[in-house]
Amino acid sequence: SQTIHQWPATLVQPVGSPLSLECTVEGTSNPNLYWYRQAAGRGLQLLFYSIGIDQISSEVPQNLSASRPQDRQFILSSKKLLLSDSGFYLCAWSQGTPEKLFFGSGTQLSVL
Amino acid sequence: DQQVKQNSPSLSVQEGRISILNCDYTNSMFDYFLWYKKYPAEGPTFLISISSIKDKNEDGRFTVFLNKSAKHLSLHIVPSQPGDSAVYFCAASVRSGGGADGLTFGKGTHLIIQP
Image (cartoon, rainbow over the protein chains, first blue to last red):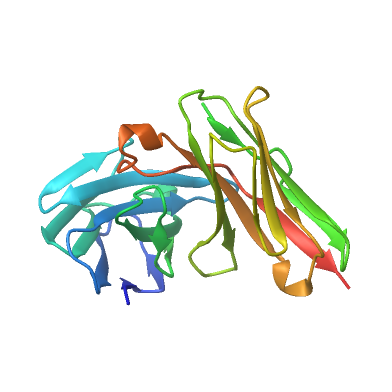
């Protein structure tokens, strides 16, 4: 069966520090991969999606970037975090029926 | 611009009664709709979906109704149980467009089931 791993579960970072969140999927190949963010009082906002290695699409301009160095690995990064980057970050994958997403357990990021 | 709207941030329902969660959308291209359930500090989990060619889909205690002319869908939970207490997200996609570019989510409704 397929599983998705996302870490760390919580992260507290100072403003201006770098960020790296990692997500891996097991039990499938060539999945579509996604990064979503849930900011306080807001819904789930799509940040990036990828349909293959090194194929990344960005949905909103921001201080973040994403990379997919391997088929089942998706990384969310920032060179310098802002206060507004705080939120709950979710990695997800889909395959077959692409609109049905399977989410990881999320990372609660607090930028102070 | 919020293309998927859940106008009730929270809803309180007594155990055993019916819970009705509402969702409105503005993009007429959306042709597939889903509901996700989320517990605190966890990722959302898929609950139920409906294609735009249908107006109702039922799965156990959960039923989703779609009114295309009103661009409105609702999730009914009957009977409501304490374990149903969670945040419910409405989501939509343009399936005919491939759907690989992800789902558009509403802000969520926090359902609280009172004993």
